[in-house]
Length: 105
Image 1 (cartoon, rainbow, N blue to C red):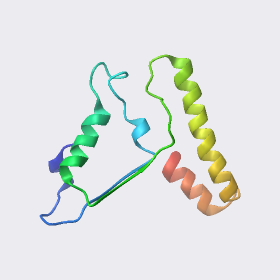
Image 2 (image 1 turned 60 degrees about the horizontal axis):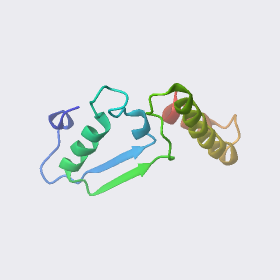
Image 3 (image 1 turned 180 degrees about the vertical axis):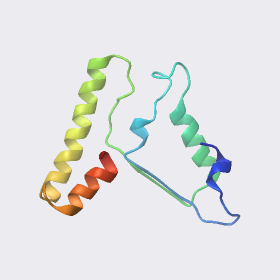
Image 4 (image 1 turned 60 degrees about the vertical axis):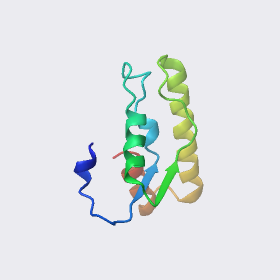
């Protein structure tokens, strides 16, 4: 993504929402020296947003060894699904929407 792709208007207030997203963006450990996460954060900084939200459970899913990465990922999703479980019944339409739109179809 490039700054020009956003089609911003002069004087427009900008809000950036990083809800459960940054852990999916690889760093240099995964992409041979290219740190896409840092590039994305620098792009957002250039925008001078009025507000930035960051919602992430602490996890380290960009390590190269498979087993620690797998365990971190399982712990991450365990926390997410346990949070949803105590909030809404499994057949509740709103829960299904959250799972489909925030996690995966």
